[in-house]
Length: 332
View 1 (cartoon, rainbow, N blue to C red):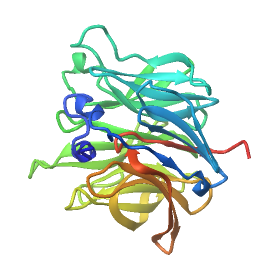
View 2: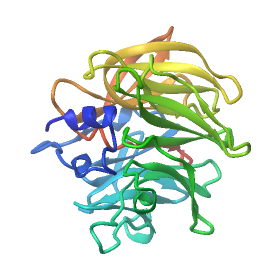
View 3: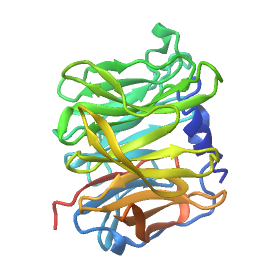
View 4: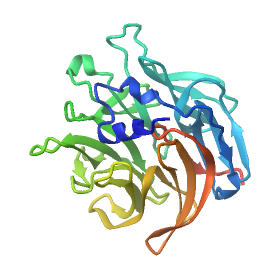
């Protein structure tokens, strides 16, 4: 698989809407190997492998869906929402634990190729009544093809636009809710340096209570894919440096009033989607070597470094443009 799909979307992830290239280039003739013994007992991991959704707990892996071409799964109560991808559009579908479709939360198929829409990066809040996502669904009205940020009210089915993209810069990506404050959303904002015209990404914060948008990182960090610790006091994120094949995996303290502080680099490599465990100082992340697909690994944060690295999913079968979810295991 040409892993450059991730590199393209790390720099400009949503050129001309949610590009078809996002869905192309998956590992060929590879078999995933699961070692769930390395998952913390506190955690359940939901991920997509070769278009199928799996639920992973310590010492157990269960396949939820079969042959439905799904990515980016999130837990929604006892159900699972995931992105259904096609050639010209994508949709957000809801499934039960047996893999049966319950309903469509977002339909990108307008039956007219000129008005079909992409949706990606769904994230649910702590009270399970809102889903943040990014989409180009209003491009016909705005004449801007880049993805904007929306929040879907699951009670009413209504979506509200939260943030607009910088036109033709790459758009918005990867929204996440603060688990300790349902009004706070972090997201990646892609834009151009006005002097060099080079694209870069910044992590921004939206406060629904005040309507204020605050920039947390700037061009010097070129940061993206933040994730919260369960208590909302720390975040993990990735930071690009000169070599786009390798990024810094960083950890920082977070305060919704003062932003980020005490930023430390844990490791350098080809990482994607770092996530906290529900066990303190444990994290999960995707990592690739060379020009291959991604594996899911886990490690511990100790003395500002990443230690005790173990593999959970190997075989280079995971896509760098499909996130996964870590939720608390309530069945222990």
